[in-house]
Figure 1: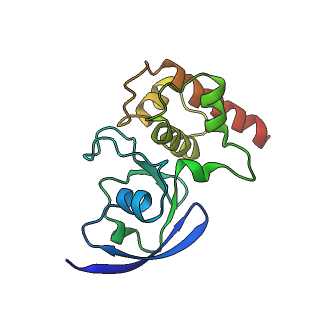
Figure 2: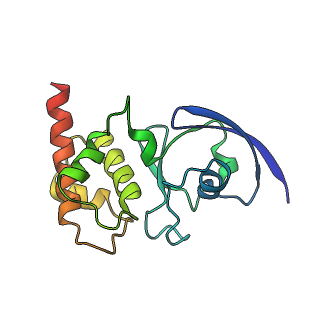
Length: 161
């Protein structure tokens, strides 16, 4: 099996790594970089638990992405969304709106919410639901999650004014 030397910038820190050609970004984040906040759910890209941001605003399923293809890219996990000890507005909104139950899907949902709001700062409810497609929550309905993303978008708009 071939190996590749790559550099990843994850949550603001640069990592020089050697990865096997068949290793996914999820495996590298969890096993080599000890970042368990990115969850392994289904391994087939169906649940969204492994979602991370690439280049700041594109949400991808890290379980489907080979780590070697991410050489030189900037990756942000849910834990990397905090700035100066402050939660990202989407993270805070999930807390404020009780959009968290077991928490397993939460990192992926938050990442998808951040990605959506980066592209569409004032989404409709339908656009939020579509933006969260591919992320499954097994504990709760999606009402509180949608409300949290909506509230975060509004809070971010007020902060920008």
